[in-house]
Length: 85
Picture 1 (cartoon, rainbow, N blue to C red):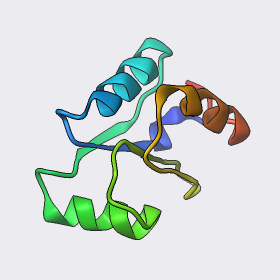
Picture 2 (picture 1 turned 45 degrees about the horizontal axis):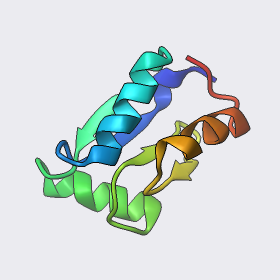
Picture 3 (picture 1 turned 180 degrees about the vertical axis):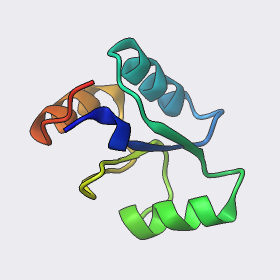
């Protein structure tokens, strides 16, 4: 699977969100960046997909969700779902 099916839900000021973006960017992943504070619909979509309100939240094209994560959880999640840059 390719990374262009990833959606990363963030609050731009969130330090974990910044770290997630830096990690994904540094490893060559592409993703749709969704600022949940700019749009109520985006926040509602993230809550519907992940059943929680914390960021960062990563959603794959197949619907797998990694909610409220730290950088150490990102690589194992992507490997588990065979997602490469």
